[in-house]
Length: 218
Ligand SMILES: [Zn+2]
Ligand SMILES: [Zn+2]
Image 1 (cartoon, rainbow, N blue to C red):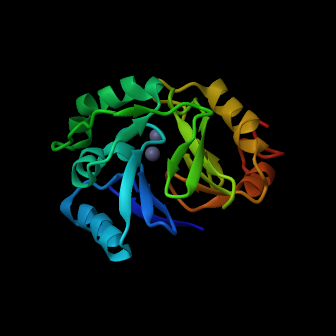
Image 2: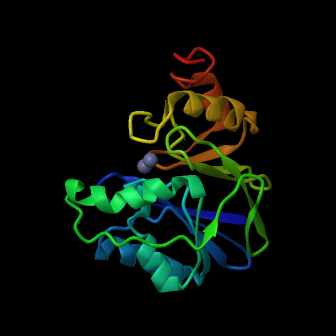
């Protein structure tokens, strides 16, 4: 059995996910905690549940998804996993942070690389890694087939898709990632995005105004 907790953190309203199973081993995906209160909310939840955090994973390295990386890595002494194509994105965060009035950003160095087809494991759980570029060059989604769950980052949202107007974005890649990768998943698969509420593959395949069956880019 897989369990999931979402926290919505920082000024970008980013969704941080904690995933764990019956062994109590856990991974933290995209920790966006950016101040003391948010950091305490995360660590208190983890200690209240008695979880053992074993890995830190990023779907991609945009600023809103990495603000808590250094804190999580240091607090739990865990390795940080990123797709290598997002290293330039990660490196640009320190340069851009002051323009968002973030002055205390601390960069964490990746310890291991994510790669499509190479699963990430914790406890008794296996997460498949899908490379879904377009919103960011090294963007990945994490899939668990047993629980029919997908952590989609900023690729596919409830009723929307990821932005394609940042440096490093590619519109054609984004549409292709959704149509040829995410939309091959089960209709019933629950999608937990980087912003906003959860959805399902089936709902977005039907109703998404960009990539759904009657969508603008269908
Ligand atoms: Zn993003
Ligand atoms: Zn985001």
